Amino acid sequence: MKRFALATASSLAVLAGTSVMAEPQAEVLHWWTSGGEAKSVAVLQEEFAANGGTWTDMPVAGGGGDAAMTALRARVLAGNAPTAVQLKGPAIQEWYEEGVLADISNVAEAEGWAEVLPASIAAHMQCEGTWCAAPVNVHRIDWIWANADILAANDIEMPTTWEEFNAAAEKLQAAGIIPLAHGGQAWQDATVFEAVALGIGGPEFFKKAFVDLDPETLTSDTMVQIFDQMRTLRGFVDENFSGRDWNLATAMVMNGEAAFQIMGDWAKGEFLAAGKVPGEDFLCGSTPGDGYLYNVDSFAMFDVDGDDKRAGQELLAKLIVAPKFQEVFNLNKGSIPARTDVALDKFDICAKISAEDMGASSANGSLLPSYAHGMALRGAQAGAITDVVTAHFNSDMSSADAVQQLADAVANSY
Ligand code: BGC
Image (cartoon, rainbow, N blue to C red; front, side, top):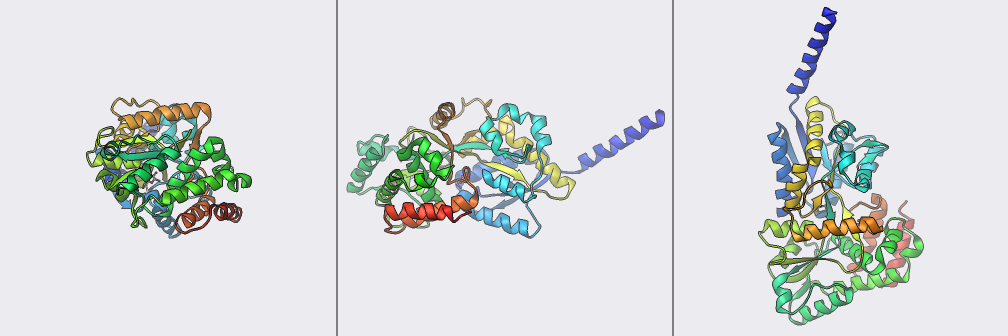
C-alpha cells in the first residue's frame, strides 16, 4: 500500500513536472492587420503573455481573410500547420473533415462554454459533438457608417429605406461629396450585396437564397431588384475605388472625403482606434430592412506535436472565451461579446443596438448567417456567388444576366 502510494505520488510529480515545464507556445495565424484590428489582437497577445505564453505572430494582411485562408492551406499541405488559426463558419467543419483539427472539448467543458454561449454560436464551434473552435465575438454585417458633420451640413438623416439612401446619395453627389466610400475588392462587394439583399428581399428571402441556395429564389424578380440597387450604388462610389482596402474606405468617411460606408462593425473599431466618438463624429445605423447578419470570429486549433504547443492551444482557448477578454477585445474590435453573460455597460450605443437587435432577431427568426463572411455556406458555394456579384459590380452586366449567372454558378459549384 505504501509502495503504491509512493508510486502514485511520484507519477503525479512527473505529470505535474511535465505540465509545468511545457511553457505554452502558439503560432497564431490571423488577418487582423488594420489599426483597430491590430489593437484588438494585441489584447489577446498581452493576455497570453501575462499567463506565461509565448506568441509567434503570423498576420496575413487582407480584409475578409481570403489571403489568410490561402496561406493556411499552403501551411497545412506542407505538413506544418500553425498552432491556432482565425477560422470561422462552415470552414471549421471543412477543416475538421480533413482530420487536421485538435479537439478542445476538455477546455470547453471545464470552462462551461455550453452554458454561456448562445446555442447558434455554440453550434458553429462544434464538430460531430466535440468542440473544435473558440468564439471571440459577434460582428454585425448590415451596418451603414456615416460622417456626422457631412450629414448635418447637408440636412440628411441616417437613411431607413434604400430609397432614402439613394436620395441622400444623389443630394451629396450634387454637392460634390463622394456618397459611398467603397473598396473594390470581391469580399467588400459581397458585403454590400448581402446587406442590400437582406434589406430588399427580407430575412425569409435571404435564407432561401444564401442558406438554402434555392434556384428559384436566386433567379427571382427580387434578386433582379437587388442587382439593380447594386448598379445604383456603383454610381455612388468614386473612380478610385478599385482594389482599395476597407479601412482606407473607412478613413474616407472619417476624414470627411465621403459620407457613408456599408461595412461590418470592424469599421467601428477603426473609428474608435482613431479616437472618433460614435454619435458625435460618426453615426451608425443598420442598413434598411429587417433582420441581422451575424459573423462570429473564432479560432480553431490545428493538430500539432509538442506539449508546449498543446499547452498553448489550451491556454489560448481558455483565454479567448473568458469574460474579461471578451469585454476588452470587443470594446476595441467593434463587435459584441459572444458570451451572453458579459455586461455591456462599457460599450457604446452602436454595440448596444447590435446586442438588442440580435436578441430581437433571434426571437423572431431573422438572425441570419453572413454568406459574405463565410458563416452561411461552404467555400465553393460562397465563392461562386461572390464571383458573380463582383463581375456584375465591375462591368455593365444587366441584372437579368447576373441572376442567371448566379443560379448557374451555384449549380456548377458542387
Ligand atoms: C472578420 C473581421 C475582420 C474583417 C476585416 C471579417 O471577415 O470577421 O474580424 O475585421 O473581416 O478584415
